[in-house]
Length: 222
Image (cartoon, rainbow, N blue to C red; front, side):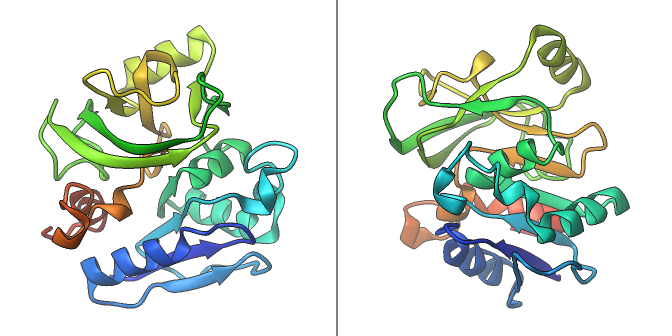
């Protein structure tokens, strides 16, 4: 399985993502720098978390306008599977690949802890290794993860089954509307989520709930 991890200044979770993908696939992911204008054919592209360009202007706003993101958009059009985690989710939103906005946490504080996620839609390529309504564990680490969209957009997301993950058991760390933690685009090949599944993929992490997300996306056994 071929995977690629996008690298931009300030994305400080790329090594975690590379390690997770190597562990799950047994193959070293490609590392794609911000100035690249093409991306080789791969099975999965991941934009990791961090603070690209210091989160100046808005989180992900500068990163979304880098040359590599044009290449990501081209791959998205071809149907390549793409995951944006945390700042990666913010970048996908800023690039227009996913709807809505990600605002400052309702608490106005950085949230760094473990939360619970409910699998709302288990039929996407990213969630197919989970059961419907299953509750899993996952870490979060963000300050601007408060997902919001207007009522028409939320109704469309809910009606189309585009809400994949929802914060569960009162663990919403940021105030996201309807406890939304992760969504897919209408085509179903792009996932954005605030929690960090790459940090719960082996027993040394204290659990492996995140491993199934990547395994499902790649069509392999977790």
